[in-house]
Each structure stands twice: as C-alpha cells, then as structure tokens.
Image (cartoon, rainbow, N blue to C red; front, side, top):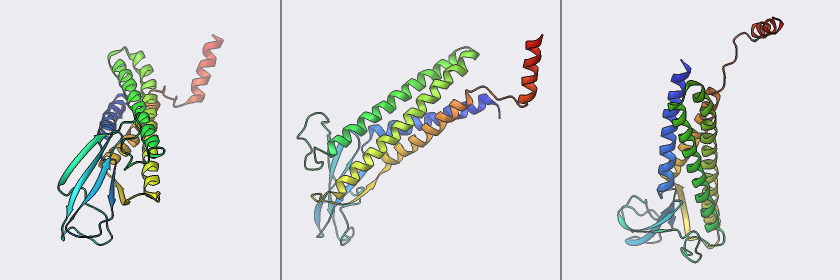
Length: 230
C-alpha cells in the first residue's frame, strides 16, 4: 500500500474520531444514576449528566418495570425530564446532586480538559488542511505537528474520561448519597472511541510523516562515504 493511501485512511479515521469526541463533549449521557425504588406504582427520580448539563427524569414505576432492590429506570422509560446547565463557576447550584467541594471540582476539571482536547483537534485540522494545499515538501512537514496534536487530543480525552469516572465513583461511594446504581452511557462510549482513534491514529500519522528508512543501510552508508571521498 502506498504512503499517500495510508495517510488518506488515517485522515478518514481521524475524522471519525473527532466526530465521536465532539459528540461526547456536547451531549449529556456520560453517566446515569438511579436511586432505590421501594414501592411499586410510584414516581422515582433518575439522573443523567455530561460535562455541562444535568438532567433529572421522573419515571413512573409500574408493576411491569418494578424489580425489588433495583434502582429507578431504565432511563429510556417515558417521563418528565428537567435539564439544567452546570454553573461551573458559581457555587451553590445543584448541591442536592453533587457535593460542591468535591464533585464540582471534578466536573470543572473534566470540562476544562475536554476543551483542551477540542483545541488540539482544531490545531491538528489546520495542519492537515495546510498539508493538503501546500507543496510536496511542506506536506510531510505539516503532518508531523498534525499527528502530535491529534495524539495530544486523544490523551486529553483519556484524562477527561478518568476524571469523570473518579467523579462518579466518589459520588456513589459517599455515605450521604441516594444513588445505588450507575452505569456509563453512550456519550461516555463516544469519548472512549474518540480517545482510541485520535491517540492511535495521531501517532500513526506521525510515523507516516517520518522519512522512510533505507532498505539496505550499509549500502547507503558506503555510497555516502564514496561521495565524500570524491
């Protein structure tokens, strides 16, 4: 397979990775939380959230959906939903869901790191566009920083995922929590996919931009020595 074909495949994979990461950042289904349901034919309150927004859903639990000892849900059941944006830099809001001193700090960190990931993706895309429109010599040169930017974007995505995971873990393990069940939803899966595609393909793009090693290095060195003698 030719080098240009490999680069085109890498660019396509990067586009998919950027789409997954962007979808994860703007959506609010990173994690779903459920409280315990004690009685049937009652309304319970489940929650799902992302980096920017928290949504509470009031779900009516009928006899068909009731399971003793399980949480409220599933979240796909019909119900009234109320969504509010996190006020990251103004304390006192959403205190009933997140302990302000701990959980809000996690969310601020995860959101800020995701912004860095998006910024690295933009820088990488600018370098890619420059490599597609520039001269042949400049193309390979711009592919190097593009690969580095995409790899950094994937790394920031991984850090954001880990911060969010620790946030949910700490909230569930708290003694004052009302949540007994949780799971990571499709936005979290999109972020995981974006991390894998961006980091690995960015690193692969960096390798593809490197000059090819000679097939016979000894022969190449001998030719260089002869040129110097002449």
